[in-house]
Every structure is written in C-alpha cells, then in structure tokens.
Image (cartoon, rainbow, N blue to C red; front, side):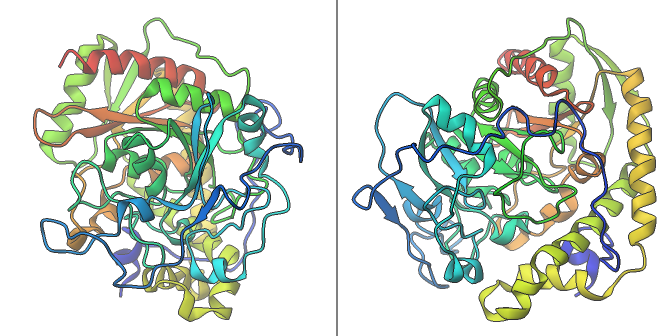
Length: 442
C-alpha cells in the first residue's frame, strides 16, 4: 500500500535521527509536575484492582447498527480499572503513562506480554498524586499511539458515545470516551500528531495539546520524541483547567480582553466551516482571514518526521514480535525502516514553519481551524481521518492547541481548533471559556 494511504500524506522515514529541538514554552520544560511521585502514595491493592485481559479478534460485545461488532464498552474504555472512592478528581490515565506497581501496555500485546510493574510513576502524575486525584483506570488507546481511529485489535475498541457506529478517534480513544461518558472527570492523553484532539473531536469533548516540552515525558512510552506531548482531556473547558492544575500545580488562566483571531481556511465539509464561522462570529472577537499556503507542506513534513522517529522508538519491538503488533501499526512502523530521502528537507520545513508561525503570532493572538475537516467516520471509512486531521502542523511547530465541540444544528457536533504561540495554554483556556459561552447561544 502506498505511503500516503497510511499517513494521509507522503511520509519518508529515517536515516539520521536527531531530536535536537529545544523545548518551547515556560520554565524547564517540566511544567511544575516533574517531581517523581512519592512511594508513600496509596495504590490499589489486589482486592481493588481489576485487570482486563487481552481480547483476541472476535471477542466483542454488541453490534453497531451497521452490523459491525463492537467491543464491550465496560471492557474496552479501560485496559485496567481501579475501584476507588473519595472526594478527589476522578482521573483516567492513558495506558502509556507509567503508574508505580502497574504494568504499562501501550495498548499493544507485544508490550503487555513483556511488561513488568513500573518501578515509579511517570513524572507527569506527581501533581495529581499530590492533589489527591483518584485514578479510576488505565485508558485504552490505538496501539502504540500510532493511529487515528482508536481501533485496537488486542483490547477492543472504545465505543463512541455519540454513535456506536462511528470510530472514537485515536490515539487517546479511551481517554476521550471516559470523559464523554462521565466515567472520569479528567483524562490524560498524549498528542504526537493529533492524538488528544482527534478523539476529542470524534466524541464531542474538549482537549488541550500542550506546548512541546512543557509537561515532562519521563515515564511515558515514546512514539516520536520531538513531537510527543501529554495533555488533559475533559467534557468541557473547565475540566481542562482542572487537568492542567493537576499536571502543573499553580496553573491559572490569563485572559486576553479582546483577542484577534486568524482564521485559516482548510478544505472542509461546508457544514463544518459554517459552524466554526458561526461560533467565531458569536464570540464578537476581531477576525482576520489568513492565507497560509505553507499549511499543507507542514503537514507533509510532520508526517515524515513522525514516522521516522516512530521507527526508532518501536522498530526493535516489531522485529522481535511481528505477530504481536497489529497490521495497521506494523505497516506504519515499517515505513520508517528504509525510506530516508526527505528527512533532512523536512527538518528545514519545520524550521521555516516555526518561523512562519512566529510572524503570524505577531499579527494575531490565536489561529483557528476545524479540528477535523469531516465528521467522525464509520469503521469502514475510518482511515479517512488520516486525511481529515488539521492537527499535524501544530505538532511540527510544537505549539499548543485547544479543541472543543461546536454545535452544527445537525445530529453531530464538529470541533474547533484554537492554536496559540508556545506557552499560551493559560490564554487558550481563557479564550475557550469565552467560546464555550458563545456556543450556548447558537
């Protein structure tokens, strides 16, 4: 199958692999949540812990209206569930973030079969532990975080609460479903090419892709280290604020009284464009239409670099266990094995794209696009998300982006993506609260 059929654009992987981009944003890149979790924390005991077994293909629950079998919701949203009570925030943690004493599976049989209990928490859990958050489970994901549909052959597929016939999106599928269904107040997801924003858009929830380097990745299973980020997911912007205060104690919003928005036009379903435009108009912010021809080139370059680094991170695992990694993920990893031609050129594009965004952010406070150019697809059309994501240029630049649902007047919401400069999470969430209020008037 052609390269672009896997990734939505031409992607040419690695020969030389350098992760040399300096962290963007505030502080030392660990966002105030970098202290290793104390071993004094109380962890679920054997009587409180329910480990969901691996599912083989065909071990599914109810059928979708289309007749396609769906994984049982109770099983597939979480890979591991914890029984927990108390007043703390209910937190779902994507199962590629280490928790002390619990094996990390990365949603992959090859990893799960070899996994030992993690010796320590990932650094990004320190704030949640200190705040008394109740971790309700290890959320399911697209295997190795290398996929946009959320379909997982080993652990089942989380059920999209908007319509079970639609994919939940990935890779942070379980995290999005957990907050959408009320099984968690906040979830942690990871975002390398859109993995917080895509499932949030598919499930009608909110997500925040953080500035690269702001939240520590120590103890997080790597995919593409120069793109990987951890960020919060929730039903609404208030939940994202709660999530950021767990990731970064002391976090607070920083409103801009009258932000100026640069509207970037991408090829999208007209109903999606109209809904995004209506919401922005209702905000009464100043709007400027921007022509950004570099957008598509940035998407291509991001795909090149992402798959190259994914091979470095997980190629050895595939070599050892080719039968324990799903075919879709294996084929994407193999793209990074031999093809090297455009890697250096993609780094040049990345540098130029970051400089271009610096210029744009001198003109406007935020950039706005749809999160997806289509509505969530059914399972037979799931790979259309590869072409429909408007997320990769954000990862290439390393800047933060907020996504949140937008009413369309039809049965499904769409999602807006608001992009800010490095370190602008405080301003993005303040703006998101304004957009959320405006959406209620539509």
